[in-house]
Length: 182
Image 1 (spheres, rainbow, N blue to C red):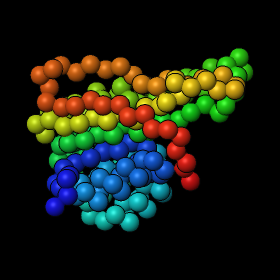
Image 2: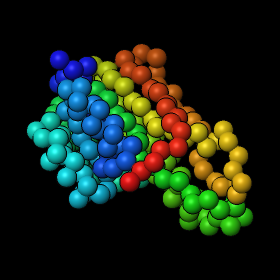
Image 3: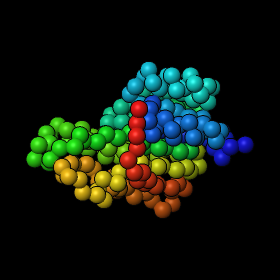
């Protein structure tokens, strides 16, 4: 018996790198996993590798309608959510702030902050239907360290969200160090 037997877990940015590692770990512990992301080829390949308890669902974390569709498809396949891992994120290529185009900044905020907010917003009703659960936001340590270029980012803790104390769920932020991706 795994720690997550028969529980439903959705991981954003789950099609590769750190997200795929989260997906594999939850799956190994018995979870039904939803690999949410924009890379259909990688997502379908990972779902095929893992088998019946894994599904790929296309999700643009910056789009509220996309979130609603992803949650509905997840519940249709596996039932309500027990865990959501808001892992999708991007970083700015190292550049001095005065050389950073606003479109780059807007993209970082849209994916890293708004995407996380929309994920929490969309997941809470499903977590309630499950009787509770956990939301894990993968954050960044970039706010802790200065860089030689003064690159911009979204900081260490990501968005600040407060849930009512009566809600039977946990909201956590994890700030891993530098992660090597493929």
